[in-house]
Length: 391
Length: 186
Image 1 (spheres, each protein chain N blue to C red):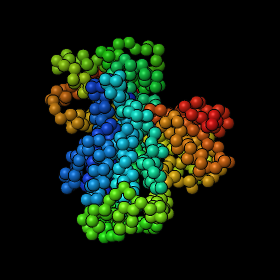
Image 2: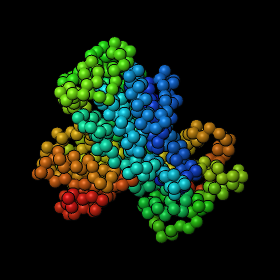
Image 3: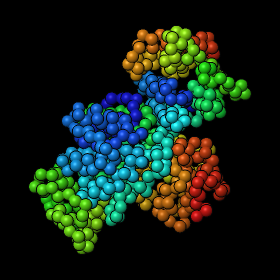
């Protein structure tokens, strides 16, 4: 195991290469530029290929090409680039192409500030393309080290589910430096809990409409399957067909292959101080969850009954964590409140759901503890762009 | 006593604020510390600022935020004004070439470090100010081994090894006796 002081971008690059990624196409954008840079340097060293697209839309289409050519492929961007993935992301979902897409969130909308973190793509990663009739897998790490393991896991899931997987990081993770351990052999990878899945080659039929089966190898062009890749509703053999009955089968598969096998990733969460039925459960993901952990620890020393739930698996949303009737507080890096809406839906009417957002910077421990106290005393919260009570 | 040491450095683009944090962090990793270093930056042309938030700890680091720095390196007046109130019982090191007025009402220790002028005096240009500041920090941050910090400087900055070595030594000696006082106070 080698230790470095390095950025999340470095950790993600090394993780991707360990997972077998040999193709990267992207378009540079802060805070993911260094990832593209590192890939352009590292991939040729391991027999891989780096291509810079003329824009993000082209870059993700290039990744689809890379995957159809037999490579494990990934791309990386930030919010302003992720929005341009809408078209190729849909192709990848519809044609069942395994890919890994990294989005490092910065404060928005649009370009916002290059070097300030944000969590404005919670819903965008669920609906990265138009049309509906699909389910997406989204994972969110909270440190550079975990970004490495989440990337490895994403390649694993992408292969098994035959679908793109989005990793939702933030500027602080990709741009920030941390001490990082990189495994140097398979034994060390196992020790760190990394699991990988080799690229297998589909021998046809190309599509499996109406089934929720996973572990069906993806299409690699030229291996008995011809060149069947299209944005239209497919037949089992991969030909286009504009027929509602055929589309029903296709849509069923795209939704239920993910929904019916959630056990492969719904163990990706972290609970801290949740054993004694806390009166307030603080829900978060990404970098804010680390400040939440510190705040919850301190608040408990002050006698507050709070616990912390951190989501790593964001989509499909893990409703099962919110069955207990209690008070919930969603802490997010946005002022409009995104995760909170899902918590509200999953928690049901009897629970109280609160929101605390910050815009462009992390919340402070002091601010968090003050908010915990107010919620537990039933006092109104500070206005932060959006408050539940006013809806 | 807290198990974590917090260092905040802030100034404007090009002063080496991120580089400074990276060197300190790398030295700490070599010493076996867990390290996190957040960097915030805007684009200089659009009025951005640069800030490094460094946390060292023997334990895994939860919050990477520097909320109460033990050491604050202020390299611009705007940075000084923005973050001086965070320093409760820590130390502010400021370069008087940029921080032209200080708040005498603060309870914490404040020390001027004329890194820019010292660099110009000794090397004819300001580019070694950052290394001088790293020398100063190595003389007062008890957690850091100065030899390892110097090793990291030479590793991270590929050029001007002789000058950087000298600049580091000048910085290390710059506070003289008052470095001991500062250390003692900690």
